[in-house]
Amino acid sequence: LDAARLSEALAQIAVFGDDQFAGLKWTFVRVKYHAFTTEGSRYRLDYWGEPWAIDAPAAEQNLSRRLRSVTSIEVGDPIVLTLDDNKLWEQGWLYFVEPGNLRLRDEEVGILREFLLRGGTATFDDFHGPYEWDNFYKEMKRVFPDREPVELEPPHPIYSCFYNLDGYPQIPGLGSFFNGRTWEKGGFVPHLRAILDDSGRPMVLINWNTDMGDGMEWSNAEEYPGYIKFTADTYRMFINEIIYALTH
Image (cartoon, rainbow, N blue to C red; front, side, top):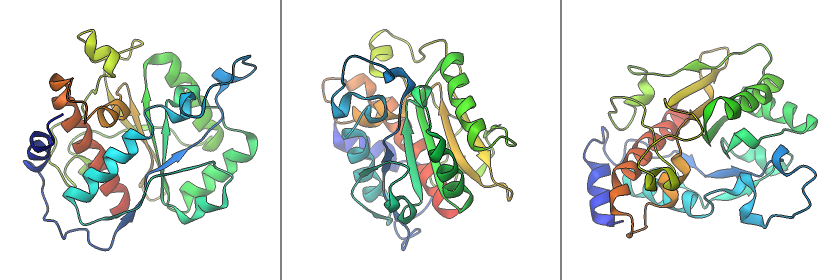
């Protein structure tokens, strides 16, 4: 897409100046997870073809560039980690894509719980409909049996911490976009949900019935000019989620 048009669209409703968040650091940490959909498969997927790697590496590269361009946050180069990697404890933010496929190993359940309760944030993105929600919900219940997801809707400050947003966007995957719709797999209504810690901090952010990953991955694809609206909406919402996580 036209970089100048996208930058203009992103800059139109920024709330704060460039130096507002000086001193903050953030790195896109993609989690390489085990997927039940590949259990027992006779076919070995290549590295970037597994569910945990969907939209990579373009999505994180594009988002990291945008965050650098519109804020003073110190943005590291994107990395991939497993939950049992000791480098996990050097990070504060994790990204899981397509968690409708997620199957946490028993030892990973406790690691993720501890990471979140220590103040970390995990964002789950690009899963749709009741079937994929059920799988994600069951996995989160293993992590937090006594906590329920809650809706985050305006006027929650996540919608105004950097960009002023009227509501939560539904970003279509590129396949849905080509078919003239924004939803897939029966996920008609987009939701931003969260699991809160004891102080009310959203330690798990849940992008359900929306595909932020595609919105980031395809933001430089000039052959899809009609997609620019969704790209801009993706960056505004995702940057708000990141900044809220860094400041709360």
